[in-house]
Image 1 (tube, one colour):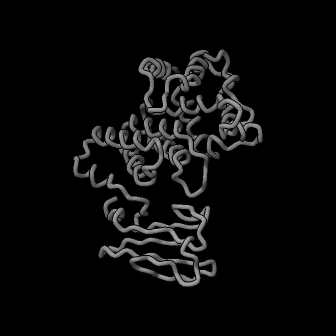
Image 2 (tube, one colour; image 1 turned 135 degrees about the horizontal axis):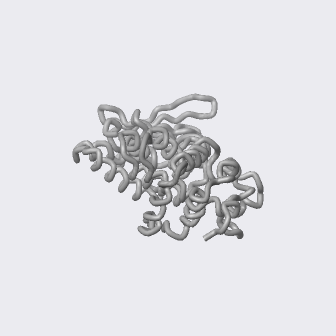
Image 3 (spheres, helix red, strand yellow; image 1 turned 30 degrees about the horizontal axis):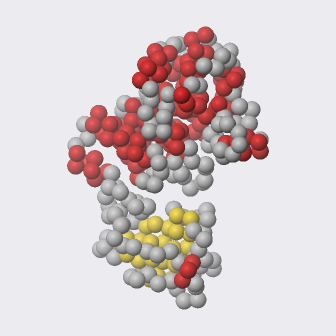
Length: 294
């Protein structure tokens, strides 16, 4: 175990710097909690399972005066600032991208705080919202790009599954819709949704209805494919394509060029005239889910 809280701080990690003052001058009990949370990397594995003994010790340390407030403050900073991997020092950018240097010690501490958040009692509405934001940032479920972190996203899903109350379940419903199945920690998200739903007495038919795979469709039944930085799927395409599943079962593709001109196509979804077919994504209607089943 690290001997000093300062050893868990990282001068190149933005989140670490934002909470530095908050972790200074702690009581011996809170210092022990922080040092313990900083060891999460040893007890939280790639299968998103936490060591039982580590969990018991965390719960015991969370009984210290001020522990709940400290955890909430730390999660709030993870949610309100940039992502954990927003870096200011180029050397630390290289390290956080997994090149040459070892992982930042701040990452283990962030995961530890996130897991601990799930075992807090009391009013959890604001905490649930912050955990959901942390999850979205680290599971590629936001319009702005943050480098995904499977371990941190999985920890946020797990914490929400542990929290009690409707706010946590609502956050999980939303995340289940927003996070694609291609994300590695999606499996722990599904597990957390089922756990929270069972605890809240959600009937099986409602659980099934709320978790129908969306295959990338938005609530209005559309999926946008565009140039890098635009749409749900980024491709090297000359045009933006908006796939729409209509209430009557029809599927259309609207192609929009840089001038804003839109051309609608139907099956077999050929690209508009004067465009190269190689730049147009191939469409399939068989994998689209009903937009009403969200």
